[in-house]
Length: 140
Image 1: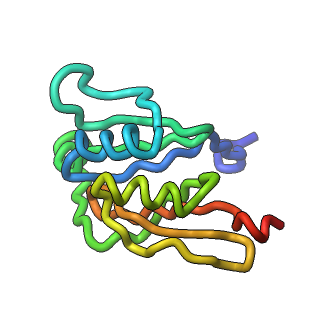
Image 2: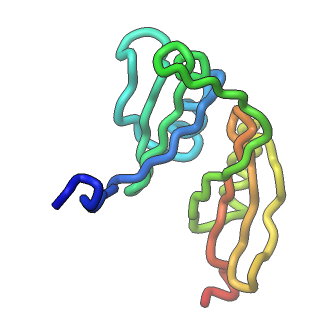
């Protein structure tokens, strides 16, 4: 088979947020949302890239400055254009626990699509985090 006809294969998707403060972002995701750190560079000192897992999902946070210095990526972070969705057993309880710890609320818990309970908070960089659960009284 010629290289132009070769089938491509992709696997193990992950998401990386480019952030101004890697340490602060890692604290948010590990201490407040329960992600487990799997990789960091450099190993000592202030990290420029950290990867974390929650279930089968991998989330990375990488320094905006390091992206330019290491890879020539000129990033101009503007308003968020994506969100991270995390499922929970109780949206209201999770929302209260996070906002009591100083996490910024974007949208208080409310019913959605007849069977879901949703809320939004922001990570330290302002990225929206959707907290969602099946509605306890309408679990379909």
